[in-house]
Length: 110
Image (cartoon, rainbow, N blue to C red):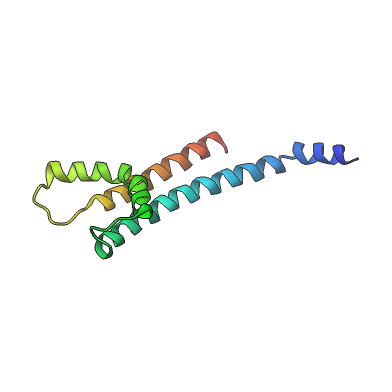
């Protein structure tokens, strides 16, 4: 009897919807963690400048791939700027990637 119920449950698509919802939630959490990691990086650069420990090193490893394009753009076009705009560019990149990923998921019907 339980085998029949499981087959009905699977054939209704409820199980697949749960997995899809979990996958979308996981993707959303990853993008939010990246966003808040960049915000934390900015705040720590003001408060905890020129000090390091294992957690800050981990934060640098996570955020540097997103901050690097902004730093290269700033070095190329705005060499004498005292303010680092790379976090704004990184947040823009993350937001753009998030929209692209979710648009692809919508087009695929996931």
